[in-house]
Image (cartoon, rainbow, N blue to C red; front, side):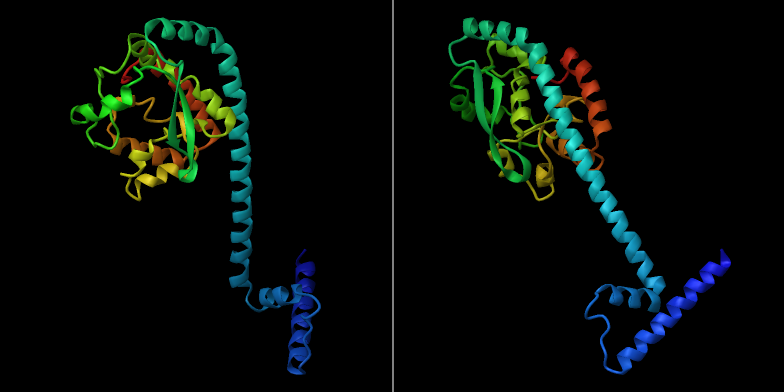
Length: 267
């Protein structure tokens, strides 16, 4: 083994010597094969060259890992949302009848939200408020219970219907967003999609929430939901973005079930 390494080193020395002689004679031996310049650099300063190889390999592995994770996440989103729609279909029918009997208006509420990299998309929910809710909001701004003022939250919002209070408590109003997931506008797990008016108040740090697809559930959704102030929501969302992964998504989805059933922090 030692003999082989010595022979290899001797060959590299001779090769490098010949390349130097050719260079001194004004002959470029690298013109027909770019790899010679790389070989020359590796033999002249191997200590500086090897770290570059390692860095390049690590970068390629990282890119491959991220791409595999992205594909697996999308696969999980499609399969999970399809399964949820099929399982919840009977509940959708019951809620639809109740909504129609409870108050006049459409079954679904469509609203523009901001998604990945600031791209707007239509966001769907079961309607939980009266049809004039947006008009009445301006008069209720002064009663906003959100500590940071960026988002609007009110525990006893008079705009919410009787059916709406029930479906909001158990997050049933969010169920149509499984269709948003199928369309690729959202993911099962990710920061909640904000309103354009909310994004207009974002700082540069807040905008980091827009670096990934928004989701139906997220860390702060299983940690207190609307009881968590906006600034803390941003911190938790950035924590998720830094450590996101398929297994973390699975864990959040599992924790979402008891959070939804208890209805804590939902209003």
